[in-house]
Image 1 (cartoon, rainbow, N blue to C red):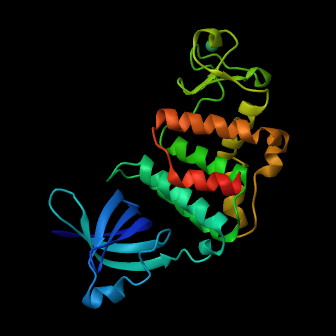
Image 2: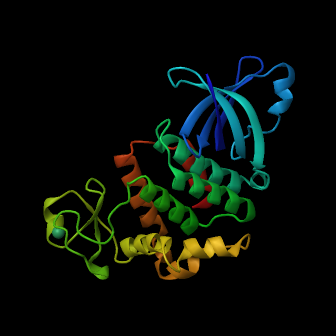
Image 3: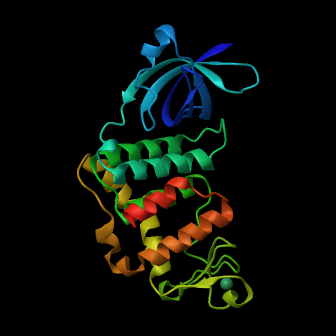
Length: 266
Ligand SMILES: [Zn+2]
């Protein structure tokens, strides 16, 4: 059995037997890993408060043969989740994104940028309650990292660029917009002008002078993408619908935490 050292974000924890715990970690170098933390005698102390969800920790674990569940040997705090528990809104936001990562990644698949994005979210959510746009922004960002980004710029059937005010047909089945010719032949939904450009505007903040870089520079200040997307405020419901339908069609997951989050934030 080899000893592995890594850092990880705790996605999930539950009690197992009288003193053991089963946890799911999102590790930096090995992706999602299921682990058992043996309780009893001195290890009880060692793991005290370390294995709480949303914590960023350093871990040492033994890999058994066959890459099943690993045995956690040591865990130390890098950054605690402290601050997230101050409101239900924050807890729900953090739960939603950890569940998103948990459900949409496979065991042992390394995803550096997803790890850093989740870490960024958990750090931010300690300082501020996310707005609707903030949540959408990170949802899109995670989809992009995982290779599931919907196409908001060109027709997914013929490939032609579509001008802003003609972006009204979205095909969840095809994963993007349709032009004014192709929509006739393919399943789609029609949305008011501005809905799809609104989503595209949030997505476009990933790069350059957008929201993403502002976030990194501002440290703990309150943040929001609201300013940039003011013109699209009326379309929250429709934007949400596009994302919900797209995710449930392509990824076939229903996130428990999403339902709760929706009631609180949206
Ligand atoms: Zn087309």
